Image 1 (spheres, protein in one colour):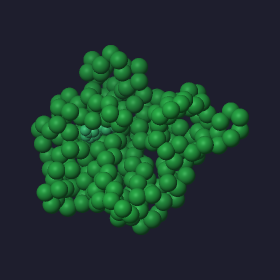
Image 2 (spheres, rainbow, N blue to C red):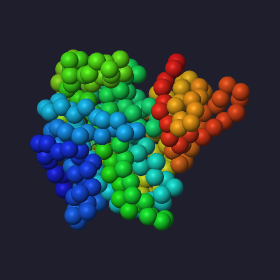
Image 3 (cartoon, rainbow, N blue to C red):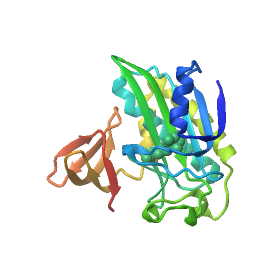
Length: 244
Ligand code: BTN
């Protein structure tokens, strides 16, 4: 397997997808120093200045049923959070489905882009963005309240190279568990690292907004919440805000 490193790309996700189409094998990793069109979830952009942060994508042809597609993202965030904790010793938490937080501020996220054909996942690009050495000045005013970096928290620089290697190693381990159908191991670890479970959350869905308590995630990776009237609901996609 290969790790392909670029100075500049539009988006490591798009580049990884191109390489996969050109015949690079499943497991190919793309890393870039900066992105000119970094993509976030829900059509947002991902701030991607040079020399500071980690932008990487893993191109995969996962041998899992499409039903478990969201589990791939949960697996990735478990791997990243575990690697981050090991290398930095900072108590990084997961916010459903795939945000990495320190003190309730976002320091990283994952964008998974998949092509599903019939009963098979044809390709999946797992894109990982982590704010490593960004300073307060590097963060745009609009997101200062909700975004942070490892450096802002700790006051010192971290090595992007070491972190990249740690994430790849950890990803390899968790991805193998996923392909071996060890879903419970992955979900248990996700719950352990999660700052979402047990909290009051506000969820913005396509057609409405709900406030509820996050109870668990199910084996397809959906968030199970308990509404104030005592009923339960399963959430597949939405924007979650932690309340208390
Ligand atoms: C999110 O919105 O939380 C997901 C952010 C994902 C950003 C990463 S940076 C590397 C990869 N390439 C992209 O264009 N996006 C992802």
